Image 1 (cartoon, rainbow, N blue to C red):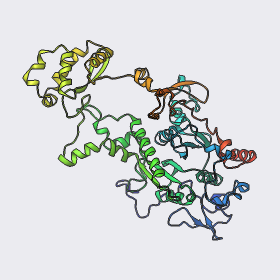
Image 2 (cartoon, rainbow, N blue to C red):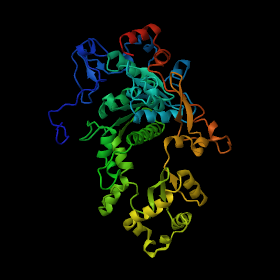
Image 3 (cartoon, rainbow, N blue to C red):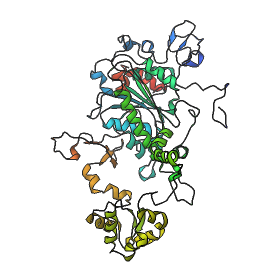
Image 4 (cartoon, rainbow, N blue to C red):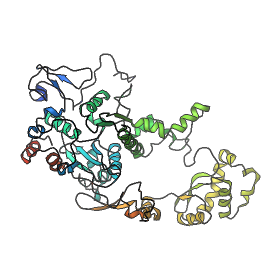
Length: 507
């Protein structure tokens, strides 16, 4: 890849992903289907032929090395009926997606957040983690008393509650084989850039493990997408926000832009992943064997959602949005965060009635009747600094709660700028049952947000706190907690084989 243009040169080669099988000595004596060397890459980059001319597929059902006793009884790709042995991939909560089985090989925020949302809707989500270290967020925190504990990370617990965890090194031949078996028991695979697969290779996965009553679909999460001149670029939330144009609008006009909250890019990406997952399932139209690859680019999400309106203004009238600090750009004055006695208060008068209500709340000051200040658009363009000082002189005499009560009495849609402890105590959110007690795997309790959605039948008068979408928040899993359940009950491995795989650092 050219260092200056980012375009791939003719002689450059894309590194082979770690999960792709290869014949020869590097694969411990041969490919996954035979012990002979001498492979060749096909145009798709996944299937190969060894010297015996037998087709080598990374995770073929017919060539399982680790479960020869169980694979002999499976003669087709058709999904087996759900039995007690399949309980390992059954949902842990009731919901409209209780028929869906999801395999998640993704870290940090976007993939895990999407998996958590889908779990809240009833899907059975199994998280694949690296043996020994697990998901990187296990080591990020926050931790209680700042004591690092991979089983007590607040970040991991929040984004991974209710899932199952298995450990697997899919770069090893036996690991690739086990991953193939897990894929054949799944409807959707969610992966991020750490999986290291190209678009064509993910399509090949769909073909390899499709067919039967359900088809495997893959949802890919990368900073810049799977195709195009920037496909192999890496990026952090801060750099992606800057590249996608979002950072330009944060901060004061006369100072450098400041990065937006980091999780804004990642959680927005997670929402897109969840929506794409629903489409890959619902979009099949009930037809078998139609797996798809959904390509989620985080910079694409940011550019379409957050900077889409700014792009429209630029296309229509060549107007560039500018940073306005505590004020919102355009519209009627006032629309700003102003200081009060104990913090900040958001003042946004959307109508003339609300503007007059604000003036009455302030005691109808004389300047409110000054003809020079009657055009509220002009007020925002010319007099915003002056009028802000007039309004703040009143706000500074009152606390946020006092001002909130005054505005509620006059039905003014203004709001205090809440601190986090105030959000956790908010009466409306408590009524909706958003915040609930969640356990770390070590047994410690902490408060966390539940599902952002809930539903009831039209004739059901039950309060939200009894809603099936959030009646109980299941804790996040320990690293590899469900290895025996998934590899034993679902895939049919005996205890000795599972222990051998542990000893070989495969799981």
